Image: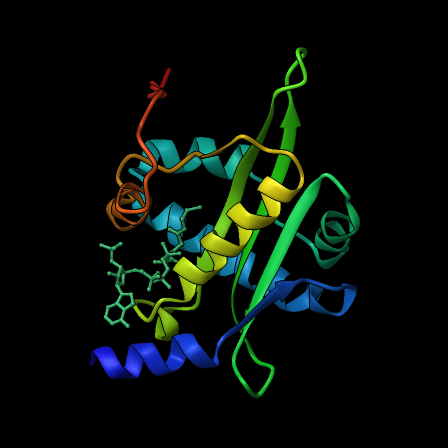
Length: 166
Ligand SMILES: CC(C)(COP(=O)(O)OP(=O)(O)OC[C@H]1O[C@@H](n2cnc3c(N)ncnc32)[C@H](O)[C@@H]1OP(=O)(O)O)[C@@H](O)C(=O)NCCC(=O)NCCS
């Protein structure tokens, strides 16, 4: 199993996304949204559905062109997209820069083969190049796979967000 994963990792190419990648990234965003909604209890699902609007190719194209963002795409040797990551540079009043990882997604059949790690490492390198001294990410509390993914890559939980159905 490990060698299959290692092969996939070595064949995967992670690059900055271009305008032509907007459609495939928008499709992956939809898969991610469905996955995240499936994790939530019914009452929370209603709240999230209301707040999170679908990512259209036009919106993704704007994100790709935004210089304060890093949008990466992972592709297999045939050029098929296997995953993506988007991050945004935020600047505090004193100039401190932090990279906020907005989304990371790897297609189901390509998980546990190192693609997510490649995306995250590349994002951290590029965020550092943009002057960021830290990286952060928000994850649903019951997304245990994503929590484990970040925990074993040096991220520590700092803030917990609570919600109540009124
Ligand atoms: C979270 C996510 C991005 C991880 O992507 P991934 O490609 O599976 O990540 P990796 O393969 O690099 O690592 C995942 C696990 O596979 C294992 N793994 C990596 N390469 C491996 C290999 N060659 N052989 C066997 N196992 C391997 C790693 O040990 C890792 O386990 P760990 O997290 O306990 O360290 C992916 O599960 C996903 O897209 N989830 C749905 C979307 C989501 O929840 N996103 C986060 C919210 S923004």
